[in-house]
Amino acid sequence: MTNRIRVLAAATFAIIGVGATATIAQDLPAPVQARQGQFQIMALNVGILGGMARGNAEYDATAAQTAADNLVAISMLDQSFHWPEGTDNMALDGTRALPAIWENLPDVVEKWGAFGAAAEGLAAVAGTGLEPMQAALGPLGATCGSCHDAYRAPQ
Amino acid sequence: MRRLIVIALVLGLATLAAGLIATRPSFVHGTELAGLTGDAGAGEAVFWAAGCASCHAAEGATDAARLVLAGGQRFASDFGTFVAPNISTDPVHGIGDWTLAQFVTALQNGISPEGRHYYPAFPYTAYRLAERQDLADLWAFWQTLPASDTPSLPHEVGFPFSIRRAVGAWNLLNLSDEFVVAGDLTEQQARGRYLSEALAHCAECHTPRDALGGLDRSAWMTGAPNPSGSGTIPALTPDRLRWSEADIAAYLNDGFTPDFDSAGGHMVSVIRNMAMLPEADRLAIAAYLKALPSDE
Image 1 (cartoon, each protein chain N blue to C red):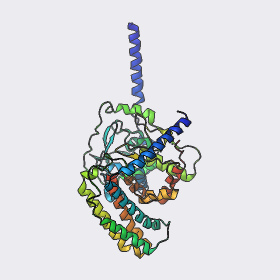
Image 2: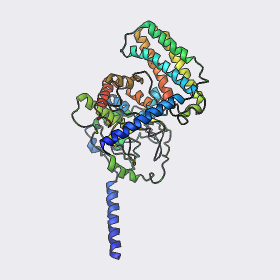
Image 3: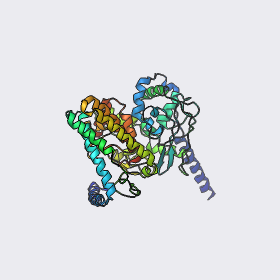
Image 4: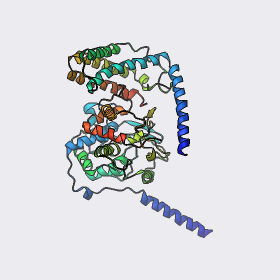
């Protein structure tokens, strides 16, 4: 295959791909959209803290406390309606949720609880200084990883 | 006619003999390693960089449990399901009674002490490029690890892939003593190349494979279907992974993307390893990724 044909083919796939993704995002069931929105709010707030922890933004005690409090609030949202059966990545395009979630629900619930505990630990110190906040952010990140390790597809 | 049959038979036998010779197991001998003294402290960094725990510790293990290399994780593939063996220091169920030469033979030639070919789910194809001093250090660190008496489970691999000798032929096609990324590299990029290509074996997931399961070295790190499970593994070439070097190094440490999404799948475990390395090594990997040829 010449390079030109390869580029053309790639461009064609890219266009089809973008079209398909747009359709899929629109068609995702409301609970999937809701949980993805939940994790986006989570990422936004982790990002406030992570930016400070990485030294990309100056430490701001009020903002750090607010972000940590938001994470606690998210952890308290009851998850019953976000995860109906049949919304895994085998059933739907546009989600990375693995079927294993529904095969191991008690473990998933325990891991969600661990996120809540880490968020509370973070909220207890986030406003008191950069170093304590950094120290408490690590364990919170570990709770993201421990769930995603088992229950989220790579991409 | 009879003469033709004889010639065909002779040729066939010669080919078979040549094949058996070409695919025979090759051992590293103790004399080749006589000058090496392992340093366990230095070996710990090699252990994390080489990612041993990601496959050989129990599924989802964290902290001290990652040092218990009892095996048991399952890796589905097109060729069957591979089950990570016990490589702890237990002399019966693990590899506690091995010599350094047997350890290096396993890591760099893919050959067991009994002369069996390992399946290339075990990345000896990458470790082949490792410095032997690093492997001696790693073996010294190994001696500090706990023993587990969990028996290894057999791989679930059907015919014809169950013929181990065929791996010898596969090795003829896929074992290389050269790094993939060539040309002038800075010292930092070269360190990153060593970490990525020889130890961390990033390409095992991030590079597509050919029909026989060999890495497509012409499409290095351009992303691939997940070799073991669903989803795809993203490309790392600079045209596709547009994060800054600082962002890449930070991700390898705390697991957060630049927009603070977090890693999924096996990469979570990889980051647990990478977080144990010095910051300079994470930055070196980032510098190497920026030196990759783009995906066209």
